[in-house]
Image: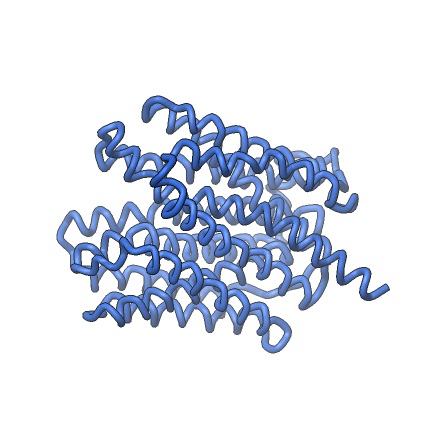
Length: 394
């Protein structure tokens, strides 16, 4: 019986993890595609920045909307809907003819992406309990790194020969994968609460019982996404400004992706060995040290080592947040809880890149800019230590 349950758990991890992989590949591919459409359509820097921002806005809406719908109509039904939206819109992206069409499609894609991630998280959270649940949530998030590796391979080996349009069509094959999801997700993921309405769900996560949890998690998601998107969307530009052309290499891109995996695996291992808040604190401090070393690095090897350190700790911290968030809410509010708090995080994902771009334009030094992230991480540590009460809801 135990072996059967273990095999079932691994199968669920692989099924949800593969969906996660495709989502990560889409986000990663966008960073490789943007320079190409900038040249093809002669876009300004502002228009290129809008492409990234409009996707984030879509993800904010999708996270709250589909998080709520998953609680009401069942996770299995809703994750299929989000994957179809994501897949069909990616197919449509291949046929866009100008930046206006591209922006519209990316907004719809963002809604599907933003909806799929919290729903997938709640499916894993509902299926396990205790330390195993925390480990499984971090391990499913580790598929994000695999998605980046997959996208890097497509960008360097496929896209130069076939162009960006056929490349995005590859990611639209996720539509076929919904057949796998439908067949292999357990019926427990389709538990419905059709009496649940948006107003009630929202007021519940801000009720006397959960307001502190919702506030603390929202701040922490804001910090994590502010740091991650602020750093990683601008790291290539920062490196080029400092004369480190290594950023253009295939090896550098793969190294940054592979460095994420041990960060996830160590975090998963530590679950149950020490408290989740302690693990999170270690990863936030590690990210701070990595940001400081990167901001002051003067040699190629130190730049590469500190960037790898940032990948290790920043993505590991994201995985720990994935383990923390859904478990702070009961099953009937889990989708809304993680959807809302992640949507607040998306505000940080929008502000981070904009703030760095504006600061570079004003001539502020790179070392000073990296202190923005250290300050944000200190705020995250304070909220973690004195604000968040770590609960583990069934």
